[in-house]
Image (cartoon, rainbow over all chains, first blue to last red; front, side, top):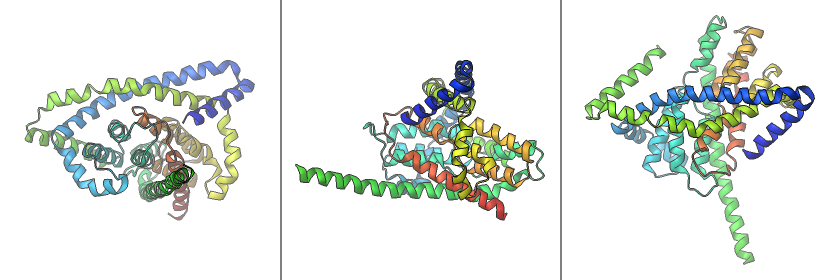
Length: 199
Length: 168
């Protein structure tokens, strides 16, 4: 992330040096202002969803949901932490309903539980990132709304293609993560063996 | 139809909580209270990434990147009109919806390009945004292969999206 951000910013500012040097600061401040209004909006959205989340958790519903998804979650994440399982189950459900903003606080909670404080992402952390980056959306409601207001004859006819594409993306993402985890494990063992031989 | 799903889920949650003798009012307040500290924690991350995206767009770097990547996209079967959309999608949600709207007005909402763009947006996510916000509360610094995998899967999704739109 550090490297990507550095390249984005330095490259852009270098280009702006030729295009519009006086516009740089105002562009940055405008963006930060936009982020601030987004944050206020998110604060309102999260208040509702965290309230609901607390209810779901206190009533034991989240445990029921986690039980339902447990085999899938255990297979994908290879974890046995019940608290994390609950949060992941809620995160996945919210994502599927197309409620990305509701999924975020639950995902953050799950991430806190999965983090092993070593500074390096473990398999479960990577899986959660990939899953949220490629999540299955059952109903692309925002896109349908935009199509309708742009005067489409049948705004909803993208539902089926979107569903196929989103399932493909998610399956590819999850399988690649599993494969990468396998290869990374082998690489680490090799490295360890080399170290052992040297010493 | 889809409008009914959420209210029904909410009624079910409230009634079930009552059934389990949970104090719905107190519990909801307890949850809602966590909203402000959470937003304070993630605001700097949102601002930092949005500043980078704004600079990228204002400087015209996206157009240069689009030219650099165009042979690759041609190979993958993604129309060149959509390169900017595919490149910006991982960084910004609101920005890519604005681009989608531009595509609609330029090409008509029911054209092949517009349907492709719709499906691409529907099957992808704001990868960098998700990654920064989700890891903001952890000690994770090295992400190993997480972002490359998410990007590869998304690009494949876009390719599949364009293929499906040709068939259907």
